Image (cartoon, rainbow, N blue to C red; front, top):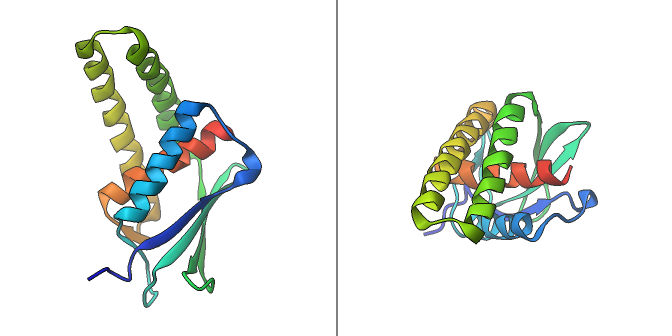
Length: 156
């Protein structure tokens, strides 16, 4: 049985525009994986499934949540300050990773990827911490959402 505490749709603010093919691929994979499997439960709401619109407004991250039918559930606005260093580090290591894929040995690629996953995990935990008391989610859901936060950041 499929849980009602899940996302059925995720939309990124399209006014920011498109990015590089690598970033767009990350976005598409994250959204697909997120819709396929997630735990997403706005606190004090009876149940979904939910639609999530992620955007950046005035350098803040906005989670606009509605039910599948479009009824407003909640809007949460988070400061990007706690994410700035993590996202900057993540961008740098991603650039190294994409370059390594084109020209490095498998062991070099693996080493860079381990570092990339470590920074990504740190960002995912920060996102979970920032949403604590607002939205309950599991770590895999937080990882996929952090990827989307990075995509917005890359574009913005």
